[in-house]
Amino acid sequence: MATTRPGDDPAALTELYVEVQRFYARHLQALDRGDVGEWARGFTEDGVFRLPPPHEPLRGRAALAESLGRFMGAAEARGERHRHWHGMLDVRPGPGGTVEARCYALVILSTAEGSRLYRACVCEDVFVREDGDLRVRDRRVTRDDHLG
Amino acid sequence: MATTRPGDDPAALTELYVEVQRFYARHLQALDRGDVGEWARGFTEDGVFRLPPPHEPLRGRAALAESLGRFMGAAEARGERHRHWHGMLDVRPGPGGTVEARCYALVILSTAEGSRLYRACVCEDVFVREDGDLRVRDRRVTRDDHLG
Amino acid sequence: MATTRPGDDPAALTELYVEVQRFYARHLQALDRGDVGEWARGFTEDGVFRLPPPHEPLRGRAALAESLGRFMGAAEARGERHRHWHGMLDVRPGPGGTVEARCYALVILSTAEGSRLYRACVCEDVFVREDGDLRVRDRRVTRDDHLG
Figure 1 (tube, rainbow over the protein chains, first blue to last red):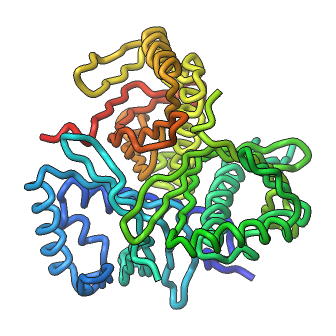
Figure 2 (figure 1 turned 180 degrees about the horizontal axis):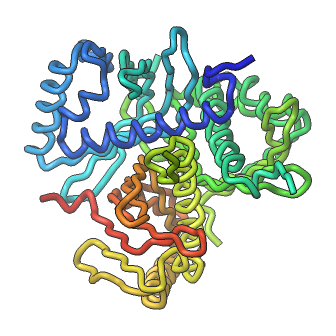
């Protein structure tokens, strides 16, 4: 019986896994170079970003780009550069054609004095497809140093 | 002449490489959330885990789960959270249908005070297949700060 | 219309992406174990390595192996071990059959006292194929703590 569900087909699952890896590389390289518009286009128009407390969830590309633009601008003004690293990626086909990803996420912070590990987090994304491209509909990030 | 050896077929080798990446993500996410039973099922029933000295090698799923459960419980009691990161993965088909993987392994340690790099290691695994799934028959981990 | 350009074919692009991941794992594991000859063979015969200032660019396998051999030997004499990590990899087919890769690069430094993050960088490679294998024709590495 023919099927196109990635979960059933090793080749399709392999392609999907690599597609998510490439998505994260481009999406977060865009953020780290300050192109928050390009970064925000990795979400659906009404995509949600559930940040760790005390931050409120952000909803929609405009709010995402505005908030992260302010954050990245403030970091630059302090002489800081951030690099977001996703790794240890798990990808599973989800309900209704969605794609669910769970990975570890580091933030590396550099100043003129050197580079250091700043944050360790877990990132959970629910992706949908729009015109063939993956878009984040819902992102939840938790900080590893928020125990309990 | 037809063959299914992954080493001979780029598509099969690509699938195998991604399969090992996904294995590590699920296997070590299980460990890091304290599900040592699930983590131990990533080994064969009599699988061996050769830890760096002064630790003795562990043999068999029961011993693996018991030992790592004790270790993770003690870390939690100290208010520590561990994240195991594998990266820089090399995968090669080995003798007798085995799969050999060599990668770098970091341990990120978080407490309520923040996150830091705790250990840098090398992990070498020999995998076999059981019911289609990869299982570790032999794991050897060495610490980068054990020089010489 | 038939085509073999990786950019047009998801399966070919997936294979290429994994091929670059494996290349980096083998190439940098060779460097980190001190096998600078093997590492240098990852470049074309006249390959260029544009290091961050104040270093001058290195050109050609012989110069690459000589320079990195000296660097790694000095590190070993100081009781240091380096591990090069590439991650957050983006790969794109480039002009004239080249392959362009952009990734983040960490250097983890270990001594008998422990392991720490030493450098965070960006690595941009232009690959060509020789006898079917990827070789770096041009590498540019920039340090994240060189702001501006």
